[in-house]
Image 1 (tube, rainbow, N blue to C red):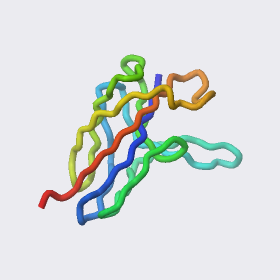
Image 2 (image 1 turned 90 degrees about the vertical axis):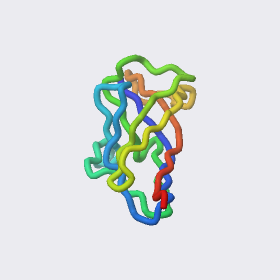
Image 3 (image 1 turned 45 degrees about the vertical axis):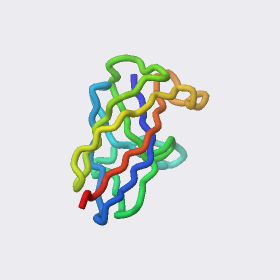
Image 4 (image 1 turned 180 degrees about the horizontal axis):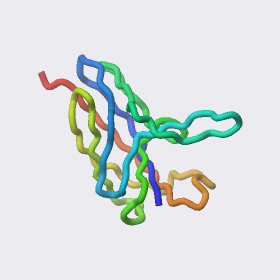
Length: 129
């Protein structure tokens, strides 16, 4: 089973940063993914270098684009639950968030044959000085 997290990440600091990884006890593996066009097919790919978040800017993690991917879910996700996710940034370090599970927003036919959970949240980080 697999799932995905979608969110807005805001960099409130004065230095560019990069989301380099994510982790959660909810699944065996958590990766940063995006979709790329490969001929006539859209493929989901792991983004090993992570996602840049410019100083004072934000990055949208959304369906069909960049997102956090949970692979090998420990248990099926249920609407109304939350999933604890630790986002690791190159500059800001670890930021732990609670992501609400929202299976009702999953479009028809998405990930046929897979339980692909839909989550949404916001993560803010930045300089405290």
